[in-house]
Amino acid sequence: MGKLFGTCIAMFLSCVILAQSSIDMFPANWFVGMKWNKVQVIVRNKKTPFSNPKVSVQYPGVQLTKVHVFDNKKYLALDLLISPSAKPGNLTIQINSDLSASKLTWALKPRRTGMGKSFAQGVSSKDFVYLLMPDRFSNGDVTNDQIPGYKDQLVDRKDPIKRHGGDLKGVMNQLDYLKDLGVTAIWMTPVIENDMPLQSEQAGMMAGYHGYWFTNHYAVDKRLGGDEAYQALIEAAHDKGIKIIQDAVYNHIGNEHWMYKDAPAKDWINQWPAYTNTNHRDEAIFDPMGNDADKKVMLDGWFVPHLPDINQRNPFVANFLIQHALWTVEQFGIDGWRVDTYKYCDEQFMNNVNTALEKEFPTISIFGEAVANTVAGSAYFTKNNMQPAFKHNAPGTTDFPLSYAMMDAINKPFGWTEGVNKLYMTLSQDLLYKAPEKNCIFLDNHDMERFVSMIGADTNKYKMGMNLLFTLRGIPQLYYGTELWMKNFKDPNDGMVRLDFPGGFPGDAVDKRVVAGRNATEELAFNFVKTLANFRKTNSALQTGRLMQWLPNDGVYVYFRYDQSSTVMVVLNTSAKTKSILLNQYAERTKGFNSYINVATGKKGADKITLSPMESMVVLLSK
Image (cartoon, rainbow, N blue to C red; front, side, top):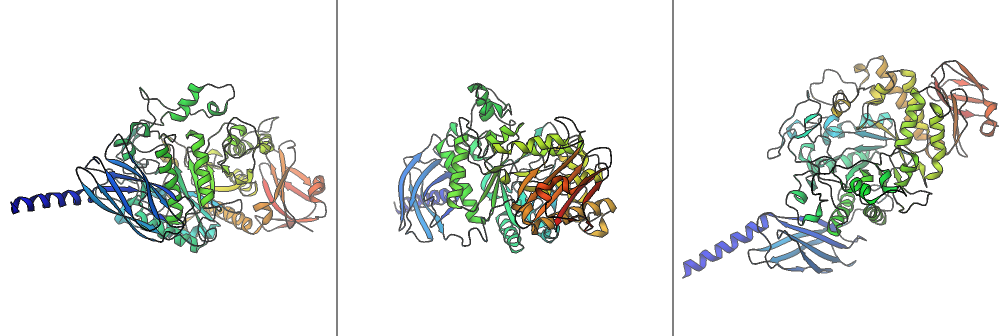
């Protein structure tokens, strides 16, 4: 009898141990003193269902208010109310069910100090953002190129759609280079775990090297160095005065994510009778004459079969995503968010997550990616001066219409609505935005043809693009390597515009981070960006001043950035003829000034500016 009793006890204890070792909790911890104090913890038992669960929580200042059971019995949602009096420490969560008993530990941590100063600093028009892809930027730790247990073990730098081994340590190694360039903020494509096998896409068998195929929100990909490397990078960047922007993806996940593969309930994912792709038409959302069917396909359709579309109307899903965003800022100390696929997400959810972030971190910044075809479409997805049926509350957006207009100004001949007139017309529609200065402006990014290739590798056009990027309103963003004349088209695939940063990897034949590794054109490009970026760092007019533009005339376009302490004049000659302009032609802004300094060269001039064909100039006016 005693032996049988002992065997039963041993079996029970092994069941308890099994349950503990197989249980995940999301979020993994929380923080005292948060405004978001009604925390919903998703408990997942990967092996044993919760049968008739009974849950108790014992901790001063923390109350278990409700337990939710899902169709998939492996999951529970625990609603915890954390009072302002709660102290940091470890909660004990006891879960007893017919098949197992578990005593779980869940931590309450102290909050960070220094909001707005040492973290959650926000990115503004005073900043210069550098966009990079960690896998392609620099490999600082070759030991994490392959991680045992991950589904993708292939590292092949010769294949543009496979992993190349870049990581967060590599990014940290380049901070001095970036600071010297004038960078004040780094936006990286997602760092969250992407434990996906190779996937079949148009380009072939593709890896998730770009980071947009999440499989575990609460883990930084170990091939990038994991949580520790991310925290180390953020702290090192902050020490050098560089902010970190994290890339959020609320719209979809990888199909290896538990949310899809072992979903708590079917309605966590947008379901269709047969696979349905999104139509990608943002007009279907805000068109006052549109229909519900088109809107549903736009919002609930999937990108590709291996990226399940998340149902953010499900309150458990919404809580999970919002809490993850809040947790990330507090856990790692990031400074701002770029939100991927913004226009594909449930509209009310996006307002809710933005509100929660700004309430908890008033100094945070957010800009959403909305690849809109028109200024009205772009303005719709941010705070605006229009009266649509739904009002978005995002502070800013990635300004695609302005990006297209800048390229038209550089590449297309002058016409009534073409060339530089397209840029003038686009900017004149800033009246639709509540705060156009909070938009992120750019010439290219990881989803576009590279800028140098789009301009035919023309140095005059390169200078014109950079002059526009660093002097127009908004937050300028440069894609990695553009300062080193990196070029390519997306032929035959996106990987061709995501090639390795030259000099960031062991064994690279040439290191273009240093002068000795650059040719004359690359050196010209690097120094031109560096000069403009560092001038902008010290010039209040370019950071926060007003913009006044003149009607383009025969291919010549003139605008000013100005405030009480500084006036900067920008002149573009997009014609095929040499053009001269007199400062007094623009007396509304030049009155009282009689000379200028060419920002790029340091040369002084007075009264008149003469520009060769396709030449541009940024000048600081002086008295």
